[in-house]
Image 1 (tube, rainbow, N blue to C red):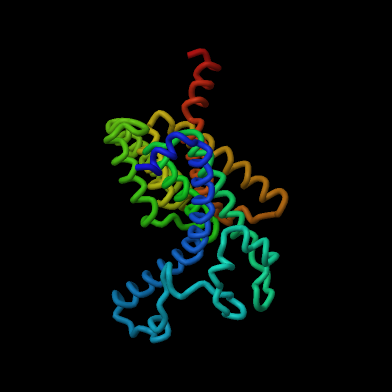
Image 2 (cartoon, rainbow, N blue to C red):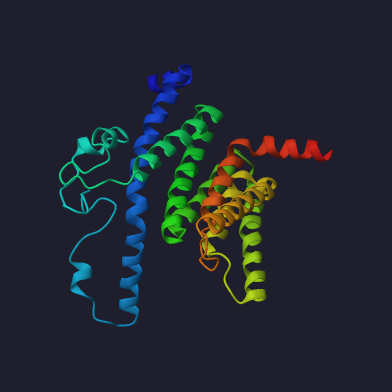
Length: 291
């Protein structure tokens, strides 16, 4: 109780704790981003092996691979990463971005994910304050970071992450934390069906799949959290940013037009913007057009 009172009365202390927590959550998200897709692939391979009644390879089953095992280690020299070398951002700076043992460069993406996660967490905490809204919003924002990087790497939006977000948002609606139950349910339906409809129209017109089913579920989660009223803003923002990035990659880097561009990161970005500034942007739009 004393800690809760301290958070309520001392906003600076609350924000400091959230910032530090964000750094450590970002460090954990780096593990999830790297390992979780590989865990899914192993699971799918095993399921296919069982379904097709094939002999299982002993090499696939001899090592344990999950979020905790094997312990973090350098992929080149295989030396384990010590706890002191796992401090978010600081360890990277102290080691100058290299493995302590073999001096292999460490991707700057790791500290960037930690910094971004901490920064977004602080924005959420400053916007909502010390309450249940912040707790729910933080879970969504951390999931957005994770989904963004996984989609960039693998073009997957795992059901293990998107589906719990839908249920969490619907649960939050029971307490009217963001929207009420009716608005949340309509938001989930509208979010899913809007992209589902675009998917099928595009497929019928071209014979190709324009997006993955994970995008439907992600937008359903955003709709369940924020309500159907903010879905047009989310869709417009994500489409605009996605088109802008895609055209830029084609012009500057000569990216092949036939290579699919993951849409999840843009949905996550738009979802975050709508979470923090959505109502203000909607009001600004309505005022501009004269409503």
